[in-house]
Length: 429
Image 1 (cartoon, rainbow, N blue to C red):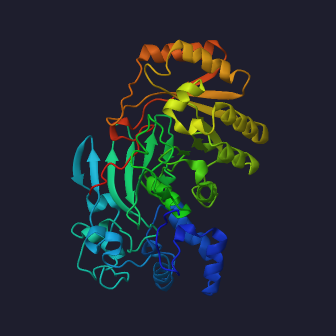
Image 2: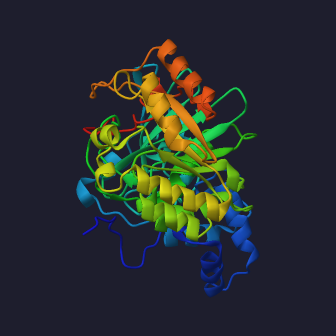
């Protein structure tokens, strides 16, 4: 049986509510529909996760929202204590650890909930300030926040990448990444599962095994937390569902989360700015086609034949390349959107000229693009990155055969946030 987060029977996270459901709830409270737009603007556009900061709402409504949407926590629940919930997250910057300052996580004394009373404290009531109130700064679960999770750690790379480690109510942890580039792209790479069952040999993301699917609200929280890392004048421009987990095995949560993210009163991203990446589950790809989802599809191919793919991607033994390509063809014919085939170059395994020639034959006459990704090493795994010359020869061979190719440049590898590296980096803390 699938493991799920435990909550009280009445509790349902704020981010699980659709706009229509939130409107119905407010109507049951005797409130007008326009309040929905106000609340959603604070959360999605103004990057505010605290009900108490929604200044155009009455104090009574802010309190009511907090009471309705902040999950009750008991000291010791699932091994959690009030002291742990109040702990400030760790910042890892260029390999050096320090505790995040309260200002770096946006906490203020006026938004604290006391562990004793569970109610929202007014400014100055607790006697704490943003400088000295650890339980104020981190906005942990059970405090005044639309978020369910607790920020455990934040890693920052000199290439502009930032990775967050979030712990959910049941103690499960996931990582998500903000990627920046010099073209102005601000991309969120999100996880969809706690762990991964696909067991790809070159990927460190599933080393801890599979635990459970993330919920719609947990996926949205990843996106909102990453968006909040950006300056006020910036917002996310792209979403890549390429974190931990297999997206097509959690579409019931992922698709509603993406619908919120792309809505004009959500994060307001264009549909074509969203990419769903799969190891190649034919049933999942066919469902995306049948529902005519407006997003891009990326299939992790990573090998030109079943022999190599069987070795590095065990899922291929269940769904070999022919089945995957057939499903991808259905997606293209149904939606009109070409498929990207991702191909990680592993030195001595799939990066030779003979492999390029075989891959070109495999994809000949398909409306597709190959995204070549030089392997990002992980210390737990034995694979090596091919040389620049080997990579260049591989790409040239594909292009000479008429295949359209892009090379994905490495981002986030210094903070274990590059392709295949997301994993529980602070699991014992």
